[in-house]
Amino acid sequence: MQRSTSRILTTHTGSLPRSPELQELLRAKQEQRPVDNAMFDAAVRKRVAEVVAQQVNLGLDVINDGEQGRESYVLYVRDRLTGFEGERRIRSWPSLDRADFPEFFARGTEEYGRPSPQPACTGPIGWKEGLGVHKDIENLQTAAAAVEGAEVFMTAASPGVIAFFLPNEYYPSEEAYLYALADVMKDEYQAIVAAGLVLQLDCPDLAFTRVNQFAHLTIEEFKKVVELRVEVINYALAGLPPEQMRMHICWGNRENPHAHDVPLKEIIHLVLRARPAGLSFEGANPRHAHEWKIWRDVQLPEGKVIIPGVLDTTTNFIEHPELVAERTIRYAELVGRENVIVGSDCGFGTSAWRNKVDTKIVWAKLRAMVEGAQLASQQLW
Image (cartoon, rainbow, N blue to C red; front, side, top):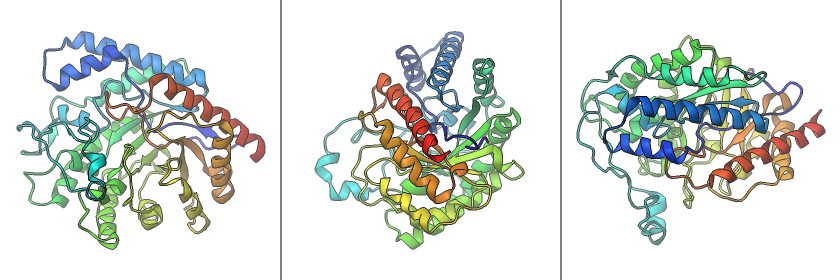
């Protein structure tokens, strides 16, 4: 993983908007309608090439495929793994925010009131037909072949976030389910690293499940949940080089109240135990932008790099480059400029359809981040 040795490097969290053509094909696959596989593969390759070129043209330093061939950052595994062949059902957890602000959540929109049905795990987990990630890797490497200087990463769902969206109805305990997922998903993680890409493990469950799945727990009890999931992550990543991995945590990429989010200071010491050298987290939205201050008291472990979000991914406001620079410099002054890469709070297309930010505005935001990183670099070097 590159470090900011001569200037502040830029990246993002992973997902980027899909084209209308690709959205329609992904919708058809989700609804289990017939889809011409050759047409789908060609549409994915085309869009991956486009988003790679756009990232390079903007001047981003660490780029990816934008998760173009995936329905979402986590549910893509449903189509690659056995064990999820059961009937799709809508499941919902109690929500602390929903209890406090029922009128807000009663709007009846797809975003807040109509979760899509998903299957539970009802059988042993395994790969259906080899590793589907190899096609993702090939598409990304082909698109990035002519890129000079940019580092390339690929995202993968963590055992914990899969367990949240695809609940267990087969294994004897939640812990057994998490380790079963780890035993299978580690093949995907290893393949990404073996291909020479930086692996980004998506772990939003380490923070956002506090307000829903584990809403009945105290903060101290929730820390035990985080501790177990970090242990599972390290088990799944055993033997892989930390410097070739990063992980992302967040509190959910929705414009909710977030009034009950667990503070970063409560979980940061546990999260820093995870094997990946890079830690991506929210740092721009109104609920968590103040948390840069925790680094006054938290010692960043040797070899670790932080990737704070300097762009809010739920609003169409385009951050001013000077604000991006200001946010960047705050972190750099606390943990060292070489230990900071700037990114986005979350993905801009965590689902292929529920995009809060207009596609053209996404690219404008990323351009503002690049310009802001340049301003910060002028002050820091």
